[in-house]
Image (cartoon, rainbow, N blue to C red):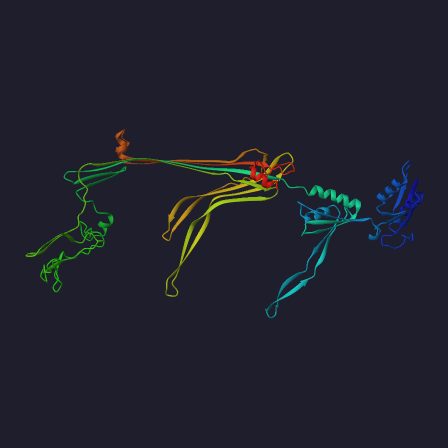
Length: 542
């Protein structure tokens, strides 16, 4: 039984009773003088019986906070043993999965001292003189150093104190230096930390269905009455009635005329030259016969004003005959015009158009826990054309710039976690972009795109479970009716005076996700659900 005895004397008494020697060193490495040392300030009270002396000695070491090391029959004791008096072991481990730097940081949080070498660096320093405004640059060399990270002691226990940890990024290895107990404890922790991360095969089915049905029905007819003074026309539900043989003038023609009734220009298309049919052309070469080379028409005879191919309103040759005695004969006439007849004309239009499109993408991605996988099945299309014209140098130069965009499927999978119960927590972000139509800008055709995007957020699925992340159904039914008032509302025969167009559009986008956790243990097959052929098996087994 001991009451408030100094630690040094208690340890000396126990060592003498066990037949061992004791060497005590103060914290600063000097010999003990018995005056105010740190260990002497700590007192111990013991009331123990039927315990081995070795166990009692270890109990005192634990509760007093001093360090002890035995060499032969001598025990070295100190609040902080010198490195030469420690039982130090060195172990180097090569890590397979975890990064060496991350493992060292993990051990540092448990009390280990982590050392990291920072190589020499060259810094470029830019300085500006406030008086002159001159900016100068200089290089400064920062020498290499060793950065030491150590956690300060708190209320929580530090399990691997007095353990030095250093890493080798090239080999992804970690070196442990310390007492055998601390080194072994750190090795056990690293073995649990260096576990393989789980992997999962994520199958994403994206079904994009577009259904388009168009129905058009309409009639058109026309007729004339009263010796063509009345002309009626029905163009798909739009009626027109002209009385008097000519249409009435427009508001612009009435208000812009100085006379009443209004007078307008001759309604001949632009380009008619309006020259006379014949003109005197003295001195021109006469026409010759192809056989006898005899002048067919004397010089000075009238010749026609020949028309052009792009101007049908010019007179042209309609018939040509050659007589050696009377000369050549030409017949001229204005171009023929077409006038709608006065008899009853009718047309019926009925059309049904069905456009069905189905886009199915079925990619499978293998992604590791905590990683991001992306697949992009797209094709570039032109969405904008910019033409820059430069006339500063007097010569027009053009520069054409094309803006491209991706049309197709872009799928991103973020695998957050795979727990021990077979649940997969992940995020799925698919984007489906499809061309809708093309547009001619004058400088070229561009493509308009339709984009559908889904951001699922975090979802949790069991291994092999299929979940519908998104089911979007959009249906549009548009009916357009054009009819003649009163007549278009008549039963049965009213269909002759109206035009009906119906467009029905249905769009469905469905996203299905199925995760399958990969078994990458030593007893797993060559991949998940993969059955290779015999030749492939022989290649794998070599």
